[in-house]
Length: 330
Image (cartoon, rainbow, N blue to C red; front, top):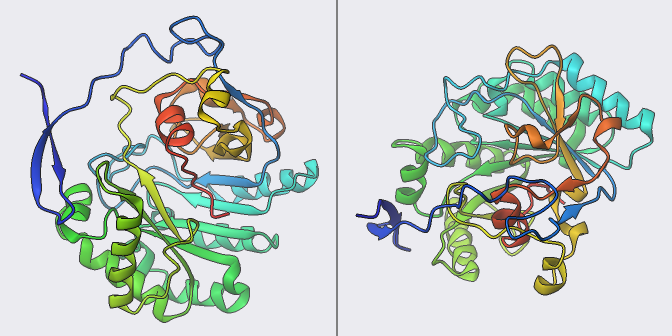
């Protein structure tokens, strides 16, 4: 019997559907060629527009399909320190890079006790700063400090709140019982105080994008939250991700076949800094979605991480090339 996965219809009611085909374990093994021997697609860095800092994998909740497996116990990626963050901010200037945005992700960034000094260091560079948060209790502990940052830096600081769906049932099926109300409370607190806001959600496989955006719009209007849900940087809808499900390998020929351009991929314009548990120093990886894959580790400095990236992971295909998604706020 096939394994069954729980899914949800557009009303948030549970139903059961057969699982998708499993990924062929022979795929995504060779960074140079695909399983059928074709040249694997690569992406050159056109410019480091966004530098991400993973503040650590610890999170106050455990989500069902979190790509990085964040939880209250997972410290596989350690907390970054202010000094480590500052070193990379300084390297941007030393290399003369055109970086316009600094992103903070986790885990839950507000679990890191140094998050406010790190945000201030990034904002002090004059760049846009984006923080991905669940807007729950860890963030609320820093209300006073966040209000201070907003007073001094205004819309340069954007907080992107994760709402996995526009219905509480689907959101809590992913994030756990009792997670909807605190997230909504945090979101409305940010809106009430005039923070620059974005929302990140998921679009279920059978849910048209226009339907999802309209439903998020209705939800936010009902909460008194002003957000342009048609703006893809203000309401970011990610495809569902499961690295164990089948995905096509992307060859060089796919760019023309799909009419997709390599310079539109995340790894053409961004990199992420992580610190592995027990490591002496942070490392730079190619993408926010592949922090554990050693094939995507590019070195310990930005200067070592400015080369091309082979699309040798299921997320490269499903999320970026075919899904057209990006984590950046641009």
